Length: 171
Image 1 (cartoon, rainbow, N blue to C red):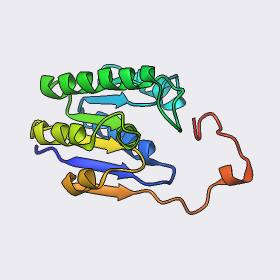
Image 2 (image 1 turned 180 degrees about the vertical axis):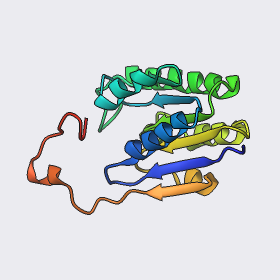
Image 3 (image 1 turned 90 degrees about the horizontal axis):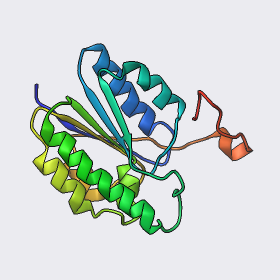
């Protein structure tokens, strides 16, 4: 089976959720999934749920959970760059059918990586691995290179009315 490159980007809610939906579908078909999360850290509800599929889903987090806006600290940069090295190891080990790079577009948009770093991964990706790239602000070069691009557009969100993230829904 040929593997393609997906990009889920935009300012709306649901990019990671879309990638995780694809992961769930893959697990149901007996495929192995690797999820590398950049920026994020912690036991979100989806991470807890994925632990139930630990025989076919591997999740690693390369964020410190502190950096979401502004300038990343040197520790954030170091954690993410170690993650990029790990992701390359995972890709070339060919032990997973699907590799999800969650929020890596954000890391690129904040200068933690160059777009060329991500383009290199896309170019060198084994042909039979599906690569999923998520996060807002996808670089134009990444969008151009991808086989499938979905933009999640924010139209209305109850956060704007002061609703906090709820366990099981947003976190």
